[in-house]
Image 1 (cartoon, rainbow, N blue to C red):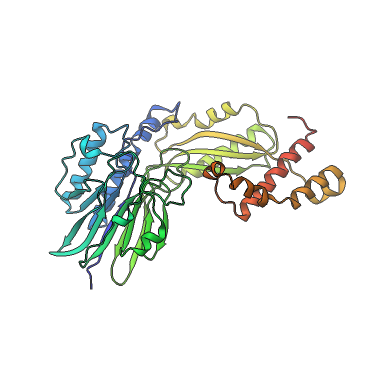
Image 2: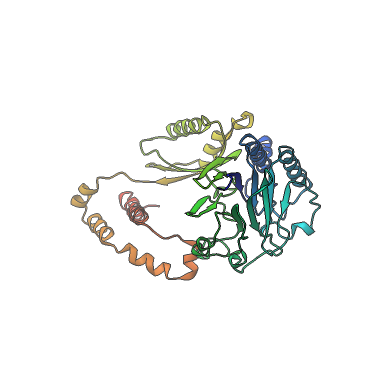
Length: 404
């Protein structure tokens, strides 16, 4: 029976990310944002030590390429030294954002840190108590874009122990990202590996459970499209079981919410409701950058002033909640069945929407490759939401007398 192995799987650290698109922030909030990737990395190191893991996998994009600073190098080395001092191995590959890194900077690292040196898939063996417990496979990018399939190069050794593959790349069927080191899921499953540690996609997901094929996502969100928990996976493999648990690491959370405040009748009441929402968000004890869409049934003016008021106290808050944007959607309240009886034109519009072949229209669009690259597959809930939004747009004009 093989010895069990316990490790952290992370990817896409993007240390010292430039954080584009965030403007007009108080100095201390800007400082927190610029240091957030470092704080997430520090939490990763602390977690590895507290969980007594055997090793840590860092699967590509340790740096952000355009911002490989002295600060990021020093911070990485300090964290790796802490892990080395606790006898924790680290296995690093470089990705499309930090390609050819071994040739660009001085990476004299602790003895327990191992870097995949080239685009050729190679392997390191992890030993515990004099026994080969795990074999870790991977490669590092030497070019900005590795576009060929690398899976065929992953050949497990004919030796005992767990076989763990690291791969910074994307599913060949993924239309939302550039196809770096593209692969088919079935190809991975057909290989004799116990765990596929993936990187490159910033949204965590488990593509397969047998064997485990896992994207951990990035350790810290960097903009409004990277919402939710960010972190790594704690993994334990044994012959009897495979345990996988997600561990949050982010120091700043990006959040997008839709708020339904249809009962509000004035700007003052709306402001109080938004302040209460902010207090609820703050109660979780996290620093948050938030963007909200607010559904109301009256026309709201002075939006910029409203955002300024919401943010004015955050300059002195240690656990801050910063509104990056507030968008209002005007929605009309009406009795659908009553309107069908009392307004002939509205009745015809509602009937047309109910009978519309939305799926047929969408399929025509999805047949267009350019459109398909920017859109997802629509499920039944999405189709109903499209119908509802279309009806709202028409009814807003109709019930407001057609004025803008």
